[in-house]
Figure 1 (cartoon, rainbow, N blue to C red):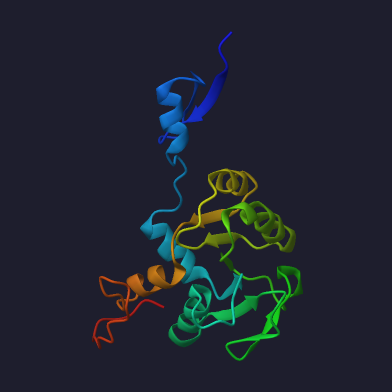
Figure 2: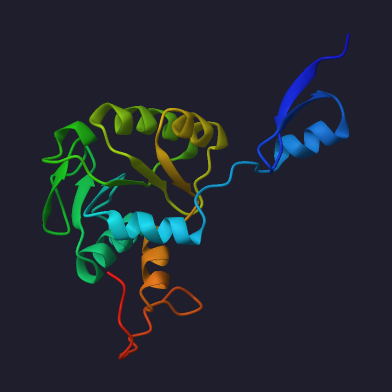
Length: 188
């Protein structure tokens, strides 16, 4: 008897395919999970008042430091840094875990390796946060499906800084702040 694998297609439907088939191997290697579209991401950012950055680093060369700096300087969000190995990041207290935060953040922005995402999902659910935003370059499809099934809104493999800047008119093609001054009403 041939082993069958359940494969989820782009449209959300599933089908059983022989595990050894080239199509099953190709589909398994491709991403099938899709997160919120641009309008939904904009709404997530508009509705949020606080963001916790899990995996925040005090090292200025790290992308989490750059994103934290941007969020502090270019947004109205209350930003919390989560790193058990740091006492302070960007002049603010660093917290050892999500449970130690003074409030439940609206968005938990994650800078951790893909294999750590399932445990972060558990922490996010334990504190009662509603949205997990996994940074650009980090992908764990199983964790995304699991998190959604457990009631979380999931954004994955997207930079919150880039998305925020894009929606607020401050993003150059290469991701740099344009410094452009505009009479156009900015979205906050």
